[in-house]
Length: 172
Ligand SMILES: [Zn+2]
Image 1 (cartoon, helix red, strand yellow):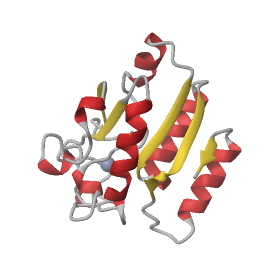
Image 2: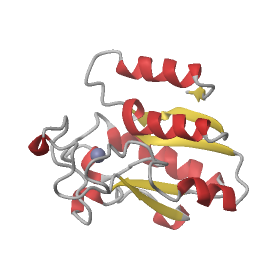
Image 3: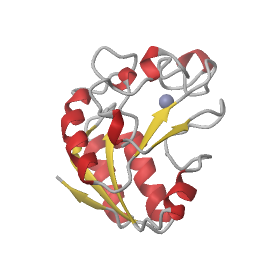
Image 4: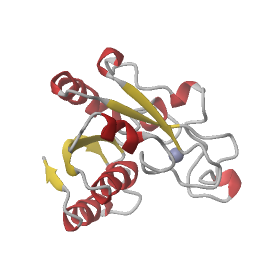
């Protein structure tokens, strides 16, 4: 589950429309999954993606802040490992695989297929799923358990197209 954090939910610093609507479905999926990883966007206060640093986004998910915490509706008891990403000031950190131990964690458990859900479809979900595919995993994105930012109209559809072109299965 990618970045199901307060700042990406309604009321948060970078709210994804309807972002919290994914929570109950993700809990249900996590109950059935043998190994569950939650990624968190976990930025330093001067992260390069922030508008204050010339980046595209408002300040969000600053490490240890309330906005960076996982949504309180998520059942934390179902999460085996939390992986923090976006810690380097100069890297986007969209992907859960970027400078994290995620691939190693999956390999250690002999994982060969990965289901990706969370926020936001057109950024961190997409980047994480594409990196999982590049690393050789079978990857399925469950679209109904994601929501998109849609900075530009059609971004969600374009993301789905990119995912499918890369060999990622996208289900509703
Ligand atoms: Zn971020």
